[in-house]
Image 1: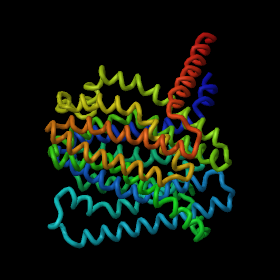
Image 2: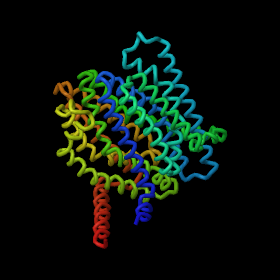
Image 3: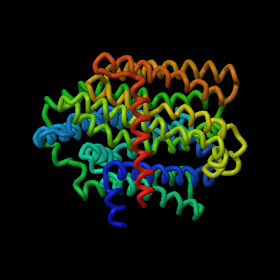
Length: 446
């Protein structure tokens, strides 16, 4: 019995889901400790740094991650070495370039910058350098579909940081400078482990070629714009809320965003599992298989997320109080969480259409799509927050970029593939019913 259970769990889908689940739970544990162990101002500084770091790291990740998976997955050994070596070369170059800019801002002195921005400038460079080996190892393991090793690597990184934050809070040592130093230490630990296990592939740096570098650069210049713009969708919310409503409103807005991990855990897992398979299908000329994967994942997740969204109307306020503490239980955070969860039901559709556009060599279409979403998000946020004068304006504004993303992406995908938007729902329902039927049969036999 135990052996059969282990065999069922030991597959790329379950390993990817388990990895995303454990990491997200550790992330929420860290947030819960920080919200209780730091002042609201200090939490705001950390959230601001995380936003800045995410946006700048997106330049490196957006330029290289999808490119590595796309050109590396399923390629012959020599081609794979060239791609991986070229990714390392470009990763080092991008890291050095952004750190050079960061050093220039740092040398201008503390007096020019606000407290939150100075913390970001002070700690960004060393954090960015220390995370490079971890990032390349992450992308390589994803392309190799080694989700068991990916799970170990991510657990070391996030688990060590959760342990550090927990001990520091228990001993009442926790402050911002110690938090940043601990974060860097855990990045170095995870990167060192990846080097020791030879998961980074840095030995392939010598196999880089000008052709592969140009190929990655040509593809990456659009995929990086797409990724940066996608993260700006979340980042602009942070900046606009802080600017119009202040840091207290930002802390309330950030809390339900963290609880959206309920959606992001299976969604990230599905994307990580599907991307290499979609890339391999397209590289082999199997368009039918690519569309099958797209519709299956997007449709099944759409229907799977509906009960989660409905459940927040019963347990949403409890979840907010559990994560942020009692002082957030009776704020707007609970209602925001419910609204965001209803909208998040549609995230898989937008995400997998965007993934398909990248896979079929149309990052430019993805870039324009996300730029339209970003423009709509900024305008809608300013309009509805100003109109309502409260945080609910953000929730209403979120509707517009989501609609644009789904329908513009679908329109563009139809230009290159025999794709119908409604087929996502029919395929999702079909696969969901098959899964439920099989589960009922298994229980009946048991």
